[in-house]
Image 1 (cartoon, rainbow, N blue to C red):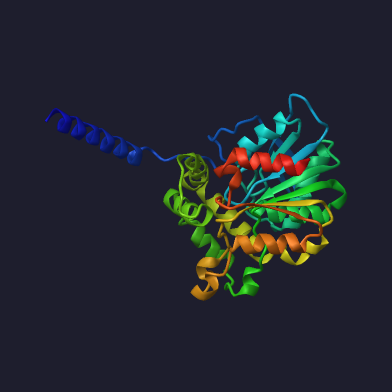
Image 2 (tube, one colour):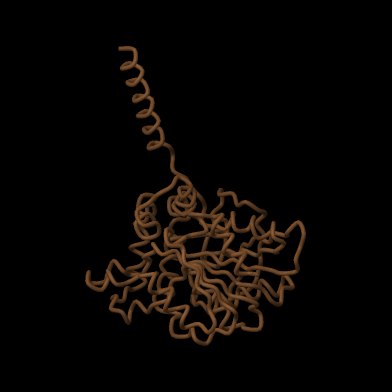
Length: 334
């Protein structure tokens, strides 16, 4: 009876804990992610673009013992500079200076209501930041949407790109040409306005991580969801709608053979990310976001590219297995 009573007490405590977790107040952050702390001091690059003043937030982390090289880390659409935390630590320990910006329209940077978003423009903004910091040449690492941007940067500024590293980049296939229907910005906006913590978590679990979920991922759900839940939710949803249109309509796949920088692809094989897949007919949707095939095809398209595959990881290997990812990245940099 004592054992049974103890088991009942433990069960009750577990249920109580679960109830507390479910009823805890969700995170609520400002339109520029005010209230969410980054792992390093956030700096601001102020500049004028498209006839309006803008601010680009960024991290500039110096190594204890510099090796003279700089890495630029470009975040994905559902990520921020802070998501690179573990990678920044590994790189600076190895002697690299790390620049990790939040692109205009994302995270702690300005979210203008009227902006002609293009990867060329975001690459230009990033180049302007590096020039202000006195950085003429750097290795550019891009994850997800940041991979599309990194590829555009390397194409647009080959003299400034020492090396290119693409981490599960999107845009490796032309979704529209593959049969995904076009979606208007108004439709993207309506979709973004429905975003919740649960929808973010469910999408990432299913598409990014092959159905798996770890408690460590939750902080990034709270980071993203907190912006949608806060007072600046409208500015966030509108910016995300505009950038979704950019991603869908500006695939980089056709220009991959023109990349001249030494390139490494770090590809989690469980990834199934494809923009607009939810609108595609089922027979087409199941063929999209096939990263085992996309990685090989991309490595063959970029002259001299090296492909590193993580068979048990998904869309964000730097989040899922930081130690393994960082070891592979540092090896590629050598």
